[in-house]
Image 1: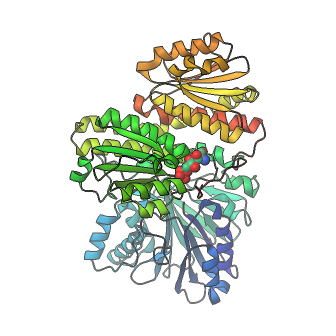
Image 2 (image 1 turned 180 degrees about the horizontal axis):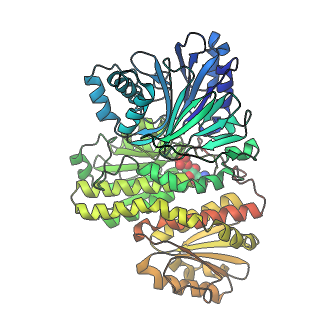
Length: 615
Ligand code: M6R
């Protein structure tokens, strides 16, 4: 998740000021940083960039630290191109007179780059972003030197997600800014204005903020802000007064990162899907080098991961077996290499890890490689060890996940797994184009459906409070719901410290039912159409032992209601195989609010670390 800051105005040492603002965005995570200043006196554009922490950039500032002028600065979280000085932002055009910073992904950068190379532009980085600098230069040449028109023209050609800020020698006291899908705010001052990707960065200077919306284009000078669409239609946005403190602002106004990250999930799903779905709703993975013939040659698929990522893998197993009719094994990474795994050159090993640094998962990846498997990693952190060592990498683009309890990374792993399964089926001609397109339509509807579930957040918080007094929890499900139950139980235990177990619902009567008594709460997932009636029977078994039963069902399924269970959470329906994405949302909220009611350290639960780098 890149961070953006900018400044136009007359202050001394404005480079320092903008870098200090950028430090307030360090919580977003980054691997390199850079700054561009248009000097107030000479109007020269100077750019400085360094891999690593902001300290590296500051150490290299020399005289620039005292410079005055219009400034943009950026922390980069690598997507296209590894972390390096050259790939860090800002990026410039060929003349060095235009500099820009960007958060997001330019999806059509390859075709644009080919065109620009043919026009004679020279590139200095592996990034998608640099294309935009050259594209502005190209428009500027064609339109006779009108900067605003050039920026608009370039943006009109770009598809993907962006928050972008552009400065130039030609207009030394102007920043052009625009956004689609990535966040950007303007802090309003007196005779000066600020830009940032998040509010905490400007709070030391102003509490008056404009939050830009998708499609907004801003011309920002010391004296004011002009807002239009990219095409030039005037628009207005209401100014908003920030009343939070800085820590709350970092969390987007939520009391904890976990809750913020739960609410981030509609966007997370869009980000994981972005660039992987064609206009005709087929699946594409431009990043995969694996030839199709090889992809179709695998006799078995082995999925290996830990914790939440392992639970995502369980969903992947069921989906792949359903779709591909090939045997799929899912293994806990800490066991994998001690199990003498049956893996050879005909095996595809899918390694899932948010951090890309989990020691057991990394060791499993190495074991699979030694045994001859092709390894495909599903990873969130770009450039992490697992991403580097795997034969193929598919990034989840969930952004930085700060809460130890994984929420949005899990959902992004599910989406990546679905896409890979559909991709293999598509390449294998196992599914007609129309069938793939129908699946994709349902995937594309998930962000809206997750957002719809999140509107029930207050009601789920109400439901959670009395449940905080439960002595223990069971989470039950069948089929895909069993994998959800496992993840839901993990979420509750790690943040609330209440003992919780997940069972395939049919297993309850083989032993665990003996534990159900008053004070024990049982969350029953009943979202699988073919197994719904069976779940009804399992719920009755729980109620007959006076456990508190909470059911998660699809809207329209009326078999479980206030007469048969203590509470019902209704969620929208999708293809049964995609229900885990929706069913986990109320469970995440329940876990969060139960932990909040108990006053737990939600973002950093006792005894746990975000990245488990020891065996
Ligand atoms: O970074 P990874 O995905 O490899 O981490 C694996 C587990 O440690 C992780 O999912 C853990 O279970 C989460 N804290 C659960 O919320």
